[in-house]
Length: 126
Image (tube, rainbow, N blue to C red; front, side):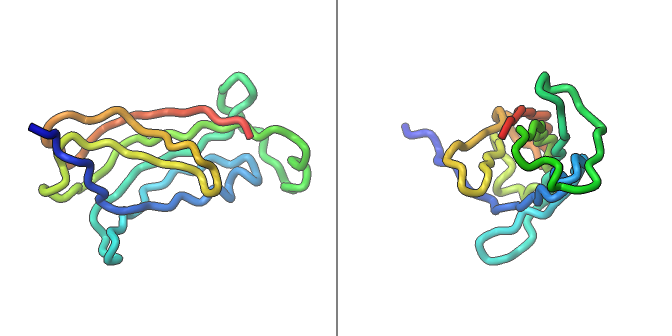
């Protein structure tokens, strides 16, 4: 017996422009399948932090001020909503940043669940 292969529901894009100003991004975005159809939603937060991972509210008026400094932030993949029945078993979410090879993945939400709750969090320093 071979375990079932992973299925790609679709892709979602989260834009990080808010980090230019050290602003939090809190989005529910559409997951779009390979045909361009809206399949479900994904809730993600991107939170600027200090070097120890603590949230910061140090707003930056001019993004030029950040040139030459390390940018610290946390990505939180919170949950998905309205996953179609045919895809809602043992769900997880994988993501990566454009032009970076690393892939990050939430834990699997076991069983049947059209609204999986992952509460996944990853700290980054770039």
